[in-house]
Each structure stands twice: as structure tokens, then as C-alpha cells.
Image (cartoon, rainbow, N blue to C red; front, side):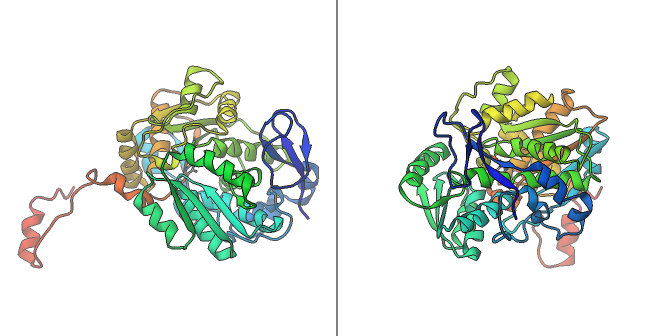
Length: 412
Ligand SMILES: *Cc1c(COP(=O)(O)O)cnc(C)c1O
């Protein structure tokens, strides 16, 4: 029932059968899922999609699963918010927030990738799922893995936010805290994945897992009334999400769901971890690994697996990239909350702050349509705002005390 034809090496094009593998044996290039697009074009249309449930499985022909969804049944179809108040502040005409802070069970876009990864892990017959995580993946695999009945091994760097650790532990996975940064955790997990027959969602299941990110792009096109935006701004950790947003638009064009595609893709990173943005700004293909130091921990990957491909997409589409300081991240989180009532995690601050910079510099045109991808909820990174918000007004439980306080409140 699926339309997957196999796995294909991104470098040499060699084809492999559908198995839990992720790297080409011949050239060590990454493997990517290949589809029969003719078959898909015959199987779905705007009308068939519109009749389906409001979750990411409405695009199932374009996802690498054979049977019915078996995890994350209610993930996806998050709001696309017309951001009029924010547009006014930024001086642009047509601005949207793709709001992945809500709807998803664990409140970040990672529920998209994990829904596909765990469904696929079940199809492959694994009983244990695992991941190397910068926080949101840990939360999502812990939760969806519990519901789906998997044993779970979750590996995280020691520096993660307390709220993300608790949010994972409540689902009772085996949480392994590694004394190192994400890149150390990921390297260790590659070794573990070689030794144990576990479904590491972002290692041996990665080709399938990564495809889940395409659903954010499908939704944007559908929610814009079946058109792709002029510009899309995407946060980068490994760079995978950015490449998949572009892939989703291209696929929709290739199977005839949309006829036109002129979207420019823009990358957003924190200045304290900007290997992809730096390469793009310097006009090179070479991604130089860095040691991350930023409050945007969910994006803190110093050696990004898909960095090269992400920079290629940005270049090919005529986009650009920006990196922003921790202070700019905090200011943008507050700006988004104040104007649109959306509380984003630090990664959302990165994306908005980078978009703002690129609008101000003219890299993003003010008269074009722009979608900003906000990928995680602010309740997950509350400590980053400690000391950066307004203070509450403390009073006694009396009208007099309230009116005394009111004298000092700006009621404008
Ligand atoms: C994981 C993550 C991303 C991007 O991840 P990629 O590795 O680039 O696909 C963006 N935002 C949030 C909140 C994340 O957790």
C-alpha cells in the first residue's frame, strides 16, 4: 500500500531495499527514502487530502510507512497564524507563523518525525527505541514510545534544561545523561547503535524519521490555500528540517498539487552555534564544526549532519541565513508573545530574530509573503526568561492595597 521504492544514496545514487540502515556502504553518503511519484500523483489530490483527519497522516502517501499509522495518531495540522500585529511591527505585508508550539502531544515539531519513526520501528519489528537528543526529541520519544509500548533508551547531554528532563522522565524511559555535548552524545549513540538491535530514531531509522518533517511544509501549502509562500524561515540544528521543508514543496509541485514554486528558503541559527549560517553567509559549502554555547539548546548541534544539504537548499532557492545573540533570542520570544500571543521556546526566538534581521537588511522583501516556522513551546524553556520579564505587582488582599498599586501601573 505504500509508495516507497527503496532507499537511495544522496551522493552516488545507489539503491537499497527498505531496511533500518542510513549510510551508503560504498561512498558513505546518507540514504534518503525514494518514492514512486507517478503512483502518488494518481493516488492523491487536494480533494482527497481535504477529506481526511486533521493530522499529519492526511499526507500518508508521501510518508515512508507501509501500513496504518501506529504512533502519533494525533500529531500535526498545527495552526498557520496570520500574524498581523507582528507584521505591523516588522513592516511587512503578509506574514504567517507556522505554530508548532501547540496541538502536538509534546508541544514541538519533533512529534512529526517521531510519529513516522516509531510507526516504522514497529513495522521493522523492533521492541526498543532510542535516540540522541537536544531535548525535544527526548520528550517526544519518551511519550510516544510509552503509548506504543516500546522499551526506551534516551540519551541527552548533561546541560539540558531541567524542564525538558522532567518532561521526559515522567514517561519513565531509561534516561541516560552523558557528560558531554550533543555531538559527543550522538557519536556515542552511533557506536551503541552498531552493537544493539535498537531503533535509534535519528540514527538507523533516520531516513524514515526525517521524512516526518515534510509534513510541516505540506500543511503550510494547504493552509495558504494550496500555494507555497514566497519565503520560509526555518531554524536549523542538524539542518534536516530545512531540507525537508523544501522537499515537501518540491514534491507537491512534482505531483501536480501546486503548479508554481518560487519559494526562497532562509536558515536561522543562534550565534553561539551557527555552523550552517556561517557557511551560507561566507558563501562556502564547507561546514566547520563549532562548540555550542547558546541558550537555544534544542538547536545546539555543533557538527550538523545535514548542514551541507541545508546550505545547498538555501543557495539554490536564493535564500539567506542569519545568526542571533542570546539577547536577540530573548527579545524575539517576548516580541512574539506580546504581538501574537504565542509563547515559543528559545528556538522560536532564534527563528523570529533571524527573520527580523533579514527583513531589516532587505534579504527578505517586505512586499512578499513570508512564513516563519516556530517549532517548540516556551513552557519547555522557561528558565531562559528568568529575570527578563516584567515583575508581578504584589499586594495585600484589600481594595486599598490594589488601588495603591494601581497608581504605579501604566494603564495605557
Ligand atoms: C530539533 C529541532 C529543530 C530542528 O532540527 P533539525 O535537526 O535541523 O531538523 C528545530 N526546532 C526545535 C524546537 C527542535 O527541537
